[in-house]
Image (cartoon, rainbow, N blue to C red; front, side):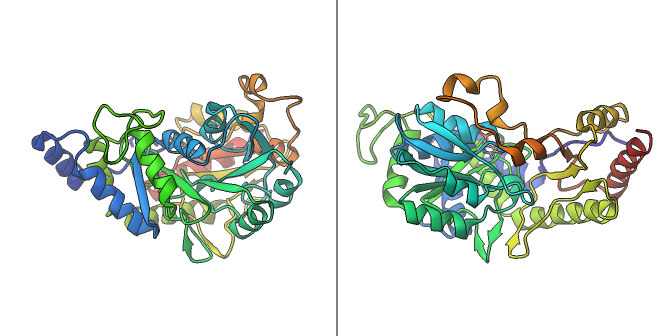
Length: 370
Ligand SMILES: Cc1ncc(COP(=O)(O)O)c(C=O)c1O
């Protein structure tokens, strides 16, 4: 049997054909495919504008700048996230203020969010962690009450829905990412989605060296970057997006297989999905009982040829962060407790039932021998 993979993009014949067509066309950048991908994505999410960029991190960075977040501003953000959510704030010398998480879904805890608002708070960077939508009604109510901007880091949640609405429609704008472990891939890549014309215009300019829509090639209106998506990535995005629903259903099936096999074990908790959301399964993360050594499980799984990760490592405990935070690093009791116990198991579209069985049996065996 082949080695069980932690994650794997599903690349089919149509993806390869789409890529070959771009290569044969000779138009490798600034061509029609990025536009086609953007139009498909805007329609899929149900927003007016989509701006394809070179990564999810680039999308978040552009959004922080497009919302005019900078020195002296505080941005509320979970620590239980991927590092980019926080770095996008740091790139602009604004201050991330870490918010604790809900113990069920590991998303921003709205109660702690409201407590951490100060006169300097300018925005909320919410994250739909692992593909589970954040508690959007509450986040938007708080944002409205205190007049805060909202960015949705939905990099892990393409296809997710909150109370019947697609993730990507919430807040001022949202960012998706397409690294190969994501629901669909463009190799490297990301996209900004928004209904705000001004954010769309600024995003298009910033990704393209600050050029204006109508200006000459060497006319730069604002400080920009090369955050463009190339045509090969965009063509892959187009062909992958056509298959997203199939991919999401495959992922849902793998997640249900895991949940079915571990739900009766009292020392390991499957992911909790709120009844009014559609989860877009990005990873399958279980939570071990308190007192179990998660890193021991990872090592033992590895010995049996099974990859697994402690996911996420909270950002407020990372070595680099002290340098960028004024005062003491806050305590985040739920984040710290949960982050010690979460374990991401191998997960991708085509994980077979035999493989899920091998992983679950290995977990049981490790537990039995503790
Ligand atoms: C929550 C979150 N934000 C941002 C990103 C950044 O995306 P990228 O790796 O495309 O820069 C990721 C990707 O892993 C992510 O999971």
